[in-house]
Length: 283
Image 1 (cartoon, rainbow, N blue to C red):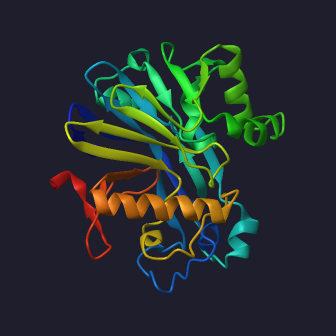
Image 2: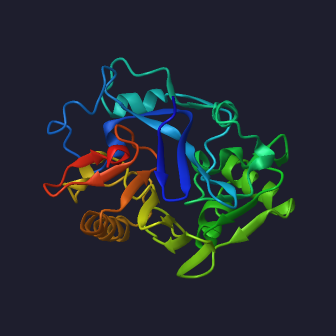
């Protein structure tokens, strides 16, 4: 059963599209001898690939859109660089998002908006399928600052570039307004660069409760207590670290639920007084 939480009038459901198996080098600054349970028998850390489904009083929308149909072999050179003697066969695999939606009684045409946190492939993969928008009735929002680096700056055959250029040609794209902006009643986006130039966080506010979709600003649970841990694809580690510290401090102080793109156990977290993660579903 998918993880769910209710925030006032909103129901949020974790949709799993697949998984990725990341080696220690994906987390610069992390001393995994301090976190022996993070790496599995292959020497990698498994993360969820997927999206969040939000069903509200007026609209049904997604935060991010999974990785699409994906099967990426684990590169031998990466295994060698990390000293992995028995790496997993796949670095990443995905394709389950449509089935996850259907299990919730939701069809692609029911989605009215997709709020992307940033333009890495594992967050936009299902925006397009077979050259057409997969969510035919949805407007797709993205951070304008990501376009130059992650679309125009990518090779012509880059899958993320192809997805976004196809979506652009279909006329379904909309950039977020600058700064903090209300997207729907109770839904706001805030520019939070660092992981990518246009990365945003999305906030749900309803009946005195708040949840933050923080995208990839938090990639590893240990980042709650270790400011030196970063992620290999952060374009600006200092800026990402500053945004992460601000988010974690405010979330703790104001008891804001955190939903990070790749974290589970718990998928929806509160920060306790002694700086540990707690499952927010039983709050």
